[in-house]
Image (cartoon, rainbow, N blue to C red; front, side):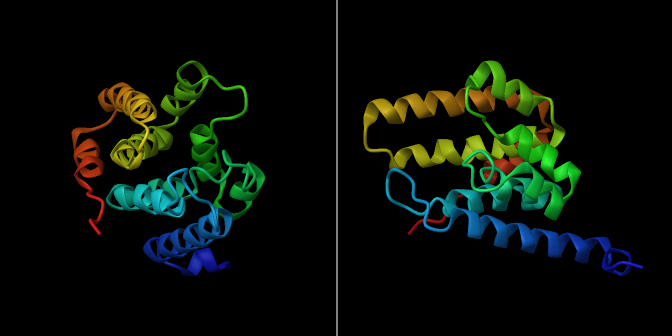
Length: 172
């Protein structure tokens, strides 16, 4: 009998979520956005948007940039979080040579978890564009993340779109 056999699904999910947060925090320690704020803030905000949707979405959300930023491997993700999570993280990872809308987005759209996580990611990134001082860069990012949301929205339930979109960043 394993620990998994003795834990309720809810408690098992809580442990896996906790492990994912710790893993992401270790991976992103010291990473900063170009604007100077800690990168982990984005990861945490994406995960919080996904919490009401379900544990596997929240876990992929908190891990979504670990492989793309070359802070972890897909093998490590699978070892600690399982095949389904690895597949979600792999779909969310833009690899060297990928063209964003030709290679990367079709991979995202083909994975049930990644579609939802990418919508949360794009929504959060769109909100963060207000922090970009350079107007040309800000507008380019706004256009990109708006397009991502437009492409994904028809593939998601209205409830998921509303849940993700209604999350508001704290005002400091």
